[in-house]
Length: 471
Image 1 (cartoon, rainbow, N blue to C red):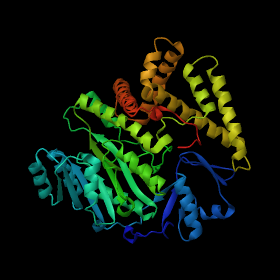
Image 2: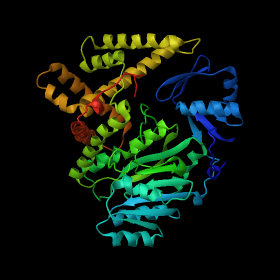
Image 3: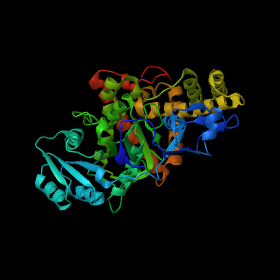
Image 4: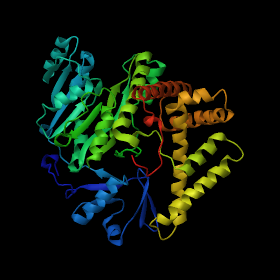
């Protein structure tokens, strides 16, 4: 199986394998699978159960291809790509850059021996960029006016003649082998774009506290769990710092005029067009963290400003939380830490379970499956409301703190929840650094989000939505 055989067919090729994800729960004597993101319940027919060998399926015909596709699309399974071959001649790397010759030198050294197009986005010292590109044998495209990263990537994309293209920012270090690994995902003919885990890297001899925090919790680091990328899923976007895509599927590429959120926009447009986007954290790229505290915070602020533009184009997909009334009530009760908090949360969870149970395709243990889903929903609602209070809505939260004891209790609880979740999911940073970093991170991003809303004269990017409501 080779990505050189790319076609317009959407069926998975013979020999393609998938493996159930470790967190998928089997219920009803193996007839039902529970998991995925967003969470779903899938009932297997007797025929489908025979096609599933342990936790794996290998495509050998239309039946196995259909089942494998259903599991992949539901984030219930991950692809097995060991047998996929990727010729280096099929891949071109586009590197946008403005000055930063030292970082560009490290970036290009790691990419050898791949074909590379360097796009100089109107550098102040174009000769320095040209020397680095020439030393590494890269083709240089020099722009006379600064277009921003999206415009520079598009200029490079227009020069690509291979079936596979990678975008790697000049402050990213990723080797050719990692990009080849990502390219294996394109053996699935519906996959248009795939990204690695982008982890922070400090170049300082003695990293300061905010650098240590950014190494542990870069805004571009989407975590250890991969899968299909969709609005509303656990992974809803990919950072453009490092991406691999099917050239023909990318169309016009990034939104040329956008200088922030252009990566989110591209992912959502591809999803709207029926393409599949995947995240593979088994492959890593190293992104230089900013060595200046003000520049670090300024970038967080800029990220936030993109929310309003995304809301104007993509509507409810950008909602900062997706909450049913029952889940919202249960999580809010837990944040209050009162004698009635657990009973209210339990009632809200039970109501959700009763609502879910009749629609579950489960013959035995329906109540247990529904309860498991409802409990997971309550936990996720608690995390979302914590984010609303501390990140997305912090200006309103700040105004309410002096006048509302209820808000003060909720904020204190949210601080504890947020720090506990962070320390469980991230390593390499002490609690004090984590607390300071999280608060400044949220203040900067949330400030940018509100500024974007004011500039656009629309609060849509700040509004949560109900599950199932139009996006």
